[in-house]
Image 1 (cartoon, rainbow, N blue to C red):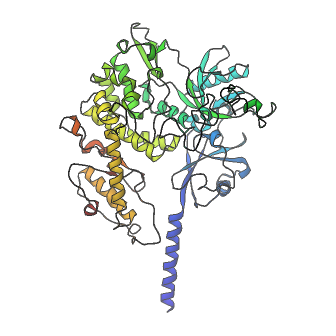
Image 2 (spheres, rainbow, N blue to C red):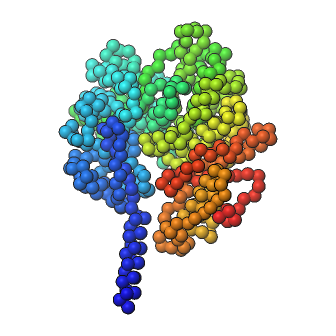
Image 3 (tube, helix red, strand yellow):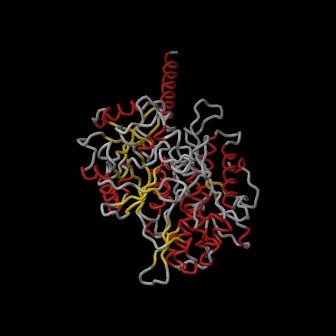
Length: 567
């Protein structure tokens, strides 16, 4: 009897240990002043508070909790320091793999970097006009761009005010150096269209207000930075961009710059809640981009003056990012000194890129009807596209800019479509008009990309939640089947003990399927021959393992498919 009792206790202990293991979250802590960008793993409970995290860090780093500041997300100032009483779930952390940013208060910390790098990444005084590079992206900011920020800092120090750009729907400020020459453009996150401090009257009227679907106000500055980071080797000519923090009385706060017609009589300096003149300045976070001196924009120039490669580099960038705001005013033109008859194109304003929807229409890409897009790509452009490391870009967007799964799905899909189309010899016009963008006159009919991704999502969800298997078991079987299909090997499904769980088990691990990217196997409108083959996703699925966060993908074809039979 005692033997059976002991066995029961051991089994109960193992069950309790397994339950605790499944409940634990493995997060990462990154010091914002660490030049190497190293992360420290930390295992916590989902209900842990920020104070619990600080206490654990105190044991490991010997830094008192009062000297620690914890942030979540790359927008340090916008997100503000997480208070001690908040739980990780309150902050939006529900799964393992998320990264918290740690800032050590004071310059005597072991983890803080040199005083020079600390000065360029921190504001000097809460009452002085200043600008600095955000600590979260200091290691990704080129030295030449850091020098421009330093020059803008000197201009603010001698009293040069930021100048609000005369056009646009958000707050864009020109910053000058001590010689009164413009060196940068600062776009605060809280002054973006439909953000709380928008200076042009585009303020939110309700929850979820946005000028374009698929992106939240306050996140456009992250897309500006992402466009520069993803423009490898400066192929498309995106100006240098980083995140910055700034404070100045001229920056728009609480409607103080509105006119009477815009409702300024009851806000700003007329408001009872207006801050006093002796209080600290409001610190803002946003994108800082180098100022580009240009002759004009494409609004003033015809495409006949532009070389084929110049148009192709813009189109390649917009296809990768699924940019929904490529109008002629967002392409600057610089005269080429060696060839004064032609111009170099500089793309700007990428805030409406990398969205969680793919409703880009033909009129969102001004270059689509230019004759250059129907010309074949040069060998240089082909090599650039075919050598893109899409999965490395995905990891960069997830780890450094905290992009969501929906955004990653469409970015991955558009990049693979671009690579497959170039490999098949298609022109950029064919890739864009036939597959990626809406081609009907009103831009309302879903594109082939939207149709296929919706189909893939429905098939993957029906295969996982099929009513016969536990969703974790179905996810693992689906992932192994797709991995074996892409590698040419017959599927061999082996279930480990932690996935062999009855359907009604009380312990239900999260499914492996976290998002639904898509296979593109047949495109009938391209003239019978498929532009995409199984090797389209072969490179990204051949090395799938349990520790990676690869989304499961479902192949769609002309033949009928049954998830139950495959599983």
